[in-house]
Image 1: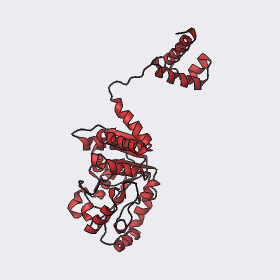
Image 2: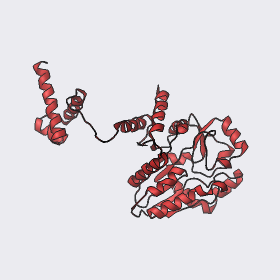
Image 3: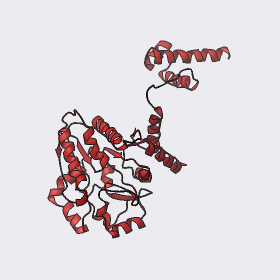
Image 4: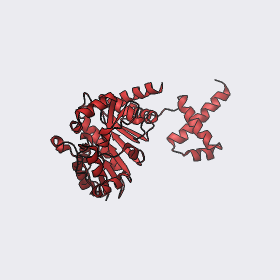
Length: 318
């Protein structure tokens, strides 16, 4: 090593020492050493590349953080949160989603929820929460009578009670028997508060439905044989808020959608923060397709699902 290289490495080591050990700011280092702040930043990066300094995080699996960063980049998302996969997947995901709600909710926010086991499970994870005075609204109609225990109105009621807010409800099944019935209801005065809230949402938590086959649902038994045939012919890959789409992220319009009581995905696209909460390898194609619609700002999933999704997104980009 020549003298010039030795001097450069000493400077890199000195800057790293001041920054990491002595906790100097980059501005302070710039002033002390008489170099530009941009140079300090560049030299800190170089010190890591040349193994003069290494940063180690103890007690955590940083591969999870790396996965979150990569999914955020490839999925064009504002944030990604990964829960560990395990026997308590549902509870782990619900806890992660509840913690994120705690971080982002603010007083008098308008917060929408679709349904799902994980979204319902979030309520049990919210403890010692300050009163928010938020407005909680359903993003879809209700399930069938046989699945009434999973009604979105129940989820909304529990959130409003737990977080000290108000709530609105939809007292109709998500799939109506005719387009006329659906149009009549969504244009009625009693639906107007829901429509107004949808157009002014601050936060939305949504589930992501998987393929039509090999996937159980709390509401799809409301679909007719004609609906199923139509969706299969159009190659439906999944749904969000009961709106189906194909693998290219194209919304499947038609009679089924016209009989559906649910927030339009175009409205969700305008919502400030839309959080998708979903896990399962069978849902990976659905999640990847939904990302093409630019509906989600945040994705919360588990590690197994995240790793598979990363593979799919990389293949799409290559």
